[in-house]
Length: 327
Image (tube, rainbow, N blue to C red; front, side, top):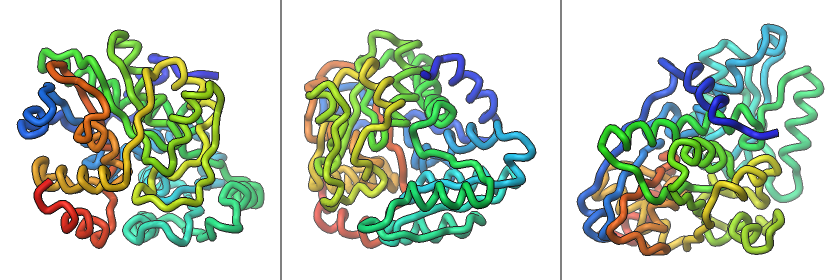
């Protein structure tokens, strides 16, 4: 099983007029600091404040009438939860979301506000997969994975397809693209689209240091896991093991994986607020963090990065701004 450019083009058709075509931005300050010509795709401006709406809507829009009546179940720390909740609301489908008790308050509140039923669980001691599967079996509902699903991946790939089109309109062909990576769904979809349209572009996945399972897997050549118990600001990237499907794609399309520290993420969140005038959550800012901390030498090149989400608790944002008032 894999995902093709044709799958992504079909997803584009389903999402047309529903998902937002987020802009492609330039930042003079960022280009001056890096010596590169930088393009930024702000998916924090997408519906529900994250790219996750793309994949969720693409998956739910293909359910038949019986499946729609039975409803959907998903598990998520927040952005997939909101994506499924909003897609379900638009399509008139009942939705139940299994979320951890420590999920950011803004994500819990938004998921409920969008009309989904929320079932809370404890990260330590309970399995969200088992809880969601039991609910789905009891109700005959469809389980909607957050990343390891071809329709989800194809939906996320529309972000990369748009990026290439928008860059071309500016007369640019990015030599490199930096993409946040949790379960690998966004990276798999985007890399599939970009490699089909711009084969010469080097694609880099970016992870936080305490959830660097893809970077470890890249080095070993097999799917590796991290304990998943260490804290991180990047709640949207807390996936301890690469997905089976996403990894099978990413190991063939990605050039390398980069890892950023918590402080580098805080700095990036503050930089985005000050210079881009954008509110970006920690997990959504890791690609920007990698660029600002010069994990790669891209001087003199054209490059692009994705800001994948903007659902940040106010206290976390205030902490980032306080620690880095002049990023």
